[in-house]
Length: 134
Length: 131
Image (cartoon, rainbow over all chains, first blue to last red; front, side, top):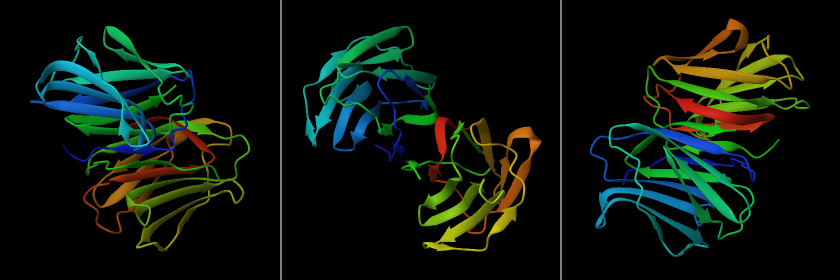
């Protein structure tokens, strides 16, 4: 995976929706958006797998607490296409995160009980074009 | 000054634009945008100082500041929402400010790409774009 963008000190508060928009590269295999406090404390690891690690068109979500991965959660809705532009929105409170995808949304528990989201990173076949903090 | 908003591993090439939108705090004296390779190697430090009514621009090489350029007009005010566009034109940077104002700053280190951005001080980023 390529070395992707890393944003720090975002200061996103509970209830504040934010979005990342980017281009999924043609021939994409996988991309990741991590949000949390820092690289070792990730409240949501969002991994869209087109075709990698035995997963085809699956979103795999997880969390990382003090460097330790948690339990994976899989979503079978996969509204992504390689070679297209997509915008993904996130909103969180102390209990859960809501991930808004084109035409679909799902929830993931806020296992870290994180208040502010300060860290965002992306990896893989995704080129971030914009970041919106509403 | 508040903690800095920072993005690393950007890939902004000549011909591309960085757009930053945000709100200037009501009570701030200063804020700054830094772009370049890292916090110690900057192609452009853009620093509006309301307390001195000046925008100071500079570059930084291995943690050393270089020669300042001062623009004695700030075309925005505290408490306002602004959009600042930084066009990377290869040999220079063109900063587009509200009201049609612009300023230019040379690409002193001949960088071929911009991989670092930070925003410090009284400016809350609400949107960031690279085109």
